[in-house]
Image 1: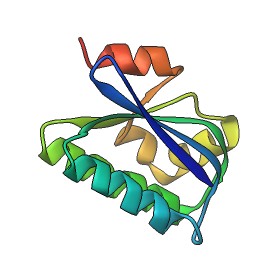
Image 2: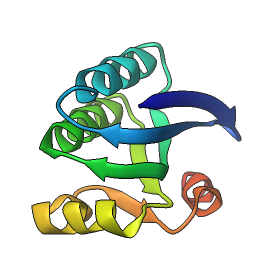
Image 3: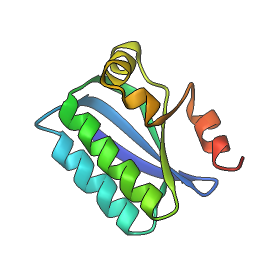
Length: 112
């Protein structure tokens, strides 16, 4: 799994590629939590490069969205492949997290 964070219009885009599973979820959680603690609480997670996520990956996203919201920000998901979207829907996470078709729409949603 690779994680790249880049700013755009006051929002930080977190591009993840690879699988998010029991072996990689802790790295994702640590990276995201440090970023939020450092003041980056407006996040768009670009999942276009993620082909699989386990429940451990979902827990990392949930913990991060809770912390981001506590700090006045939010975490939004964008460009999710069908396999990952299915996991989000079956687990009920699609009702907790805000999901957008693309990164541009997710970034723009922070301005609304």
